[in-house]
Length: 363
Image (tube, rainbow, N blue to C red; front, side, top):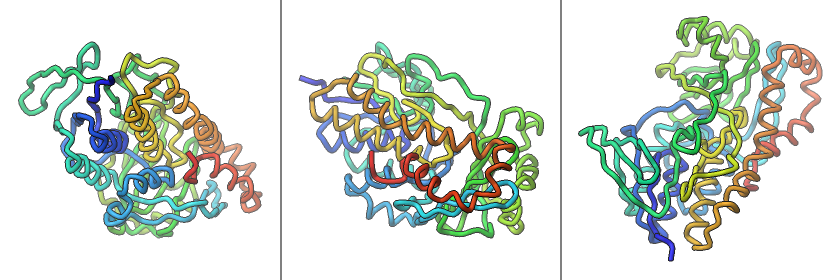
């Protein structure tokens, strides 16, 4: 008989979806989160059709839409010289801040009857889970049938993933002169970024930036972004009247595939399982779908983590390849100059790439 208990590390979309499903299925669930909510986070802040479908199956779609997410029906890719490719999405995406999204999901977890320990940090997962209370600084040991790692970075698994040479930066803006129904991708000098509308009339601005560029500006992200704006003609237009509405944030930008091995009775979810190029806006959707798949297997009592790991590899593989190819294309100045003259005739190829990135409900 399976020990029907789980400790889940991390209360982002992956951790909350896993906690909800397992708690609803009669499991004893403890969810550990180190930050107080609501909290902001570096993220593209777009929920894909893959993630929305998970909410739908959990009966949470109607509640989600009461958060006032912005419906995104187009993807726009802007070359540095101002050439634009405008493609309809196969299914809508939804612009929503992580601050609002994660706070709502955690409330749903509490309603399900799961135990939430917050703020607290996981310091060990094997042989026992060790949790430090960040208010009292006291350590406590826990045991459970399974540990689900949803810490967003894979730091508690077999080995910490090798860091890339890029950082993700993010801030919210107001008064951007851009569409409110599109997720926009901008190629700049050697890297790229996205702009997407979120709730309350704001936009999320998130860029992948070489670590060396941040260092050259001595960490002044605002000054660096002012320079970035000048490297794309459409980006300059978008930000003529824009006003920053939050502090800049930065975080390491990992890229790694699903591991070939997992620690015994430990299941990584979301970015703890794999991390792909953020160009596709699939992060939250993949996190939620991986949590759903893991919880479904645990609830079935036909538990085979080798099969689950292979399912994860399939879930990430095509998206990873297509997002990486797109990221390289928009980040390479020479390639961008070659593509720019014909960008308006590339819609058929763009539709294929968007589908491969996972912009449908297909899992």
